[in-house]
Length: 111
Length: 116
Image 1 (spheres, rainbow over the protein chains, first blue to last red):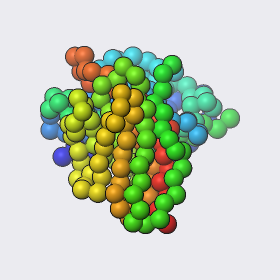
Image 2: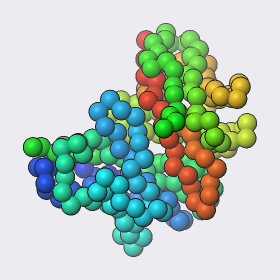
Image 3: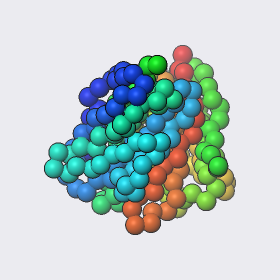
Image 4: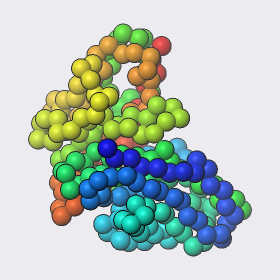
C-alpha cells in the first residue's frame, strides 16, 4: 500500500524566514512525487513534480529515496505563500496514475 | 490557460436521491479522474477513466458510483442512492497522455455535495 505523511497540520513563519514543509512516503516501487498548493478560495494547483527538478515560485523539493522524503523548501517565505500545501504520490512504475495525498500542511506567513 | 470546470459548485440533495456531478476536462487531455475530500480529511482517489472505460478505482468507488463520458466534452460522476457519508467536496481532474513519466493532473474547483 502507498501512503503519504505530512506530519505538520500548521506551519507558521515570519516573512523572510526559511520554510520546510515535510513529506514522507511509503511505497515499495518507484514513486512519482508531487507538491500541490491550494490558495484561499482557489483550486488545487500543481506546484512541483520531482521528475522535472525545477524551482517554482522559489520552492524546491528533492526526492530522497533513502529517507523516503520529498520535503518542500523555500529560503525566504513571502506572505503570498500562505496556503494549503499537499504532497502527493503516484506509482508510475505500475502504470497507476491515481494520486495518494497527504493530509496537507497549512502554511501561514506572518508579516 | 485552459481549466477543468465543474458544475454545480454546490449541490444539496436528500438522502437516497441520485445525484450527478459534471466536469468538463481540458480539451486535449485523455485521462480523467474523480477525487473526494470529506471535511477535515485527506483528498481521496475515487476513479480514473481512459479510452471510455474505468482504468483504476478505489475501494470507495462501489456499486452506487458510476462514471460516464456521455459526449466529447463532459465527464460525469453519478451517485445512485446518496448516503449522509457521501457529503464531501468532489474534485474532477484531467491529464495528458504520459510522456516518459506521469503527466500532472489538473484539478477543477470542486463540487460541494451536501446530503440531508
